[in-house]
Every structure is written in C-alpha cells, then in structure tokens.
Image (tube, rainbow, N blue to C red):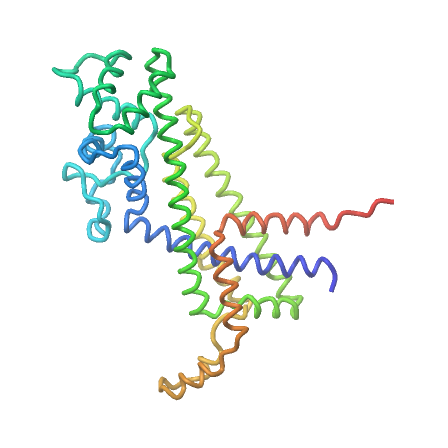
Amino acid sequence: MNTSSVIDIAIGLVLVYFLLSMVCSALNELVSQMLASRAKYLKKGLTILLTDPGKLKKFYEHPLIASLGEPIGESTMRLFLGDIKPLAGKNFHPSYIPSKAFAQALIDIVVQANLPGPNKKPHTFDNVRQAVVEITDDDALRTALLSCLDSAQYDLEQAKKNIEEWFENSMDRVSGWYKRNTQKVLLIFGLIIASLFNINTLTIIDRLWESPQLRASLVKVADKVNSSVEESQKEKDKACADEKKKKLTLNCPEAEKIIVNVDLKLTDKLLGEDFRKDVKSLKLPFGWRNLEECKSTSMTCLCRFVKSLKWSDFFGILFTTIAVSFGAPFWFELLNKLLNLRTTGAKPEKK
C-alpha cells in the first residue's frame, strides 16, 4: 500500500471523528442552553471577584448588566431546568458581560455604597478612589481596585481600562473551566453514541484498508465538509473582527452568540438530508450486526449477544470515545492538513 492510500485512510478516519464530534458538540450546546451553563460559570467567576453576596446581587441588578440577560419568556426550559434566578422578574443572568459594562457597573456600585449623599454628578478619579478606600467588607476587591487606580496615574479612563483588563483576565480562567467541563460532556456523549451505534475505530480502519472505493468516496465527502466548514469559519472570524474593531477589545464575547448560531447552522447543514444520503451510500461499518440477527428480546438472545462481543469491540469504541473528546475544531484542523497534504503530495527528495 502506497503513501497516498495511507493518507486516504487517515482522512476517512478523521472525517468520522469530526462528524461525530460535531454531533456531540450540538448536543452539548443544546444542554448548555437549557441548563444556562455559561451563565452559571460566569456567576462562578464573578463570585471570586465580588466575594460579598450583597455586592454581587447589586451588580446583577445594575441596568447595564440586567439588560444583557435573556427574557424569561424566550427560554421556558431554562426556567425549569436552570437554577439561575431571574432579575427583577424579567431577565435571567446574562451569559456574557462586556468588559466595559463590568467596569462601569462596578464603579457605580462602589461609589453609591461608600460615598454619602446623592451621587448624581459624573464620577471623578478622586471620589472613585475615596469610595474604593472606604470598602471594608471585601479586602480582595479593595486591593485589586486600588491597584487598578494607582497604576492609572489619576486618569479615570485608564483606570477603567485597567479594571476591564482585570475582568478579561479572570474571564480567561472561567473559559478554561467551561472548556474542561465541555470536554467531559463530549466524552460522555461520545461514549453513548459510539456504544449505541458501534462506531468502532478498529473496524473502520480495517474496512478502509480493504476498500479503495470507500476511501475515495470518503475523500470526496471530506472535500465537501472542508468547504462548508471554511465558509462558516470566515463568517465567525468576521463577526469577531467586527466586534474587536467596534469595541476596541482583545476578545469578542458579544460575538459568541453569533458564533454559536453559525456552529448550529453548520451542524444542521452537515447532518441535513442531502449529506445523510451521501454518508448512507458509503455503507460505513456502523451498528451491531449481532444484535440485528437477534430478533428475539429474550434473555437468552441478549446473553448470546454479550458473549459474542470481543475485546476489539471494547477497545475500538474506547478509541472512538477518546477521539471525540478532542473536539470538532481539532479534527477539522487535522482534516484540513491531510487534505492539503494529499493535494500537494510528498516532498521530493533533494539531489
């Protein structure tokens, strides 16, 4: 078998991993929206910055933050399944908070809580710093805010930027928590789907090794998938770049909603009727043939099916499950590289 055939086998296997990862990612996104997972992790991160429950409650009730939440009427499932309580009887806790809104809302809360009398005048550097010094119930918050203010050299706008940077750095840590949790969820979904449909890595490799026609068909499907994903990636990059240009920030939290919708559209397209027909025509080695032959539902038939299982079934499904946990972006990047390698061919030897 030549190098080109080995690359085709790798493309076919990576394509299966990518499509399975897309299905698991779509299921994870559905569950995350129902359970308000992003809002929960955001609140968990904010409790580290604002350890006082009273300040955290006032922060969420601030108009700049409360207006970012999703109305209750648009998410009935979250009302029953999520434990994020609505704000002012109208909105859920937001899933994303821009850094500018965080900085302004935090300054408003600190000034209103620690400076006596009405605070209708615009904030100045001196009264903001005085309000921060007066904080007595949260030493960590006072120390962090004083550091942001003192490094701004009496410039309130620079102080706000320092607070925004402090918030963004904390949110990077929250993103890490969420990604690790997502990887665990993908592992669970991958195990369930691979076990139900017998998506066995070892069986797939064996079938691809024996069938040149199947390898060629999978490469064609991989080209279609690659084109569709690249189009959606351009759309996501544009949404993120537009927000960075408009907001002058390093991250693009508001564009995340657009990115999630693009991912769901892509999943719907890849799992659409036309694509399902292409995949079905490939006749990939999925499913439990021993179970199909067992038409009876008796315990004898079930025991016969269990006895027919081999160690290769266990390890093949285990390999598939672990592969899915890497996520769709990893497998798409690898698929793209393999397709480019197949197009360009091997590097010629130097004379």
